[in-house]
Image (tube, rainbow, N blue to C red; front, side):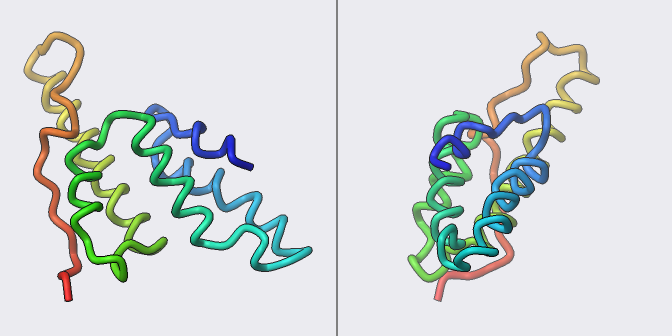
Length: 117
């Protein structure tokens, strides 16, 4: 199960990554609902985002969130948004005839729909 964090592939997309993470959770829930809980998925997901090296800015913003806002639901939205911005930046760069590689997503500004309390 700890290998799940290495499965993120930007070419497959973040939505598919989330599906891959949730599949074993569903199977494990037939035995014990807490065997693979959302906190476990969150930990693995954050590890994967660090390992992929594409979302430095989004990770910095994540670390600035209060602990109560660092949860599974916010993680899913936050990094889906980061991926969308990364893909948009790549599309725009490709249309301009760039050098084949867009500016890193870590250089983007990300907004989040939640406020610190």
